[in-house]
Amino acid sequence: MLTGMTILVDTPMWPAHGRLWSHLVSDASLDELHAFAERAGIPRRAFDLDHYDVAEESLERLIAAGARRVSSGELTRALIASGLRVRAKDRPGRGTHPGR
Image (tube, rainbow, N blue to C red):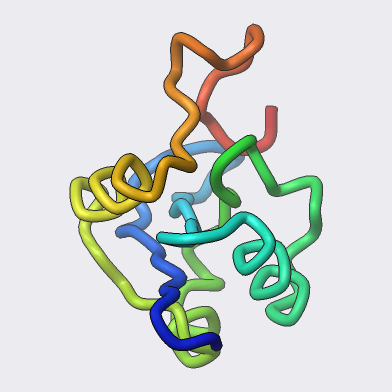
């Protein structure tokens, strides 16, 4: 991972499809986020404008690959501070739940 950039993953708490989901974000760059996701084997279809939806069972693997586990509040604050956040009201007819 590049110095000064961090991949963050929050606590799995978003239910869908019989499991809990987390959000995976970068605090600096969508390019960094996509590269990390590709290395971690996360399919591009899991990307939702500013984050990847990742299943709870992937959490430990993502942390081992370099993601830092944070609360959902920390993740949201980092995403806002990075300028990468896409607000719910700006999402084109899409919710924020995995597997739409």
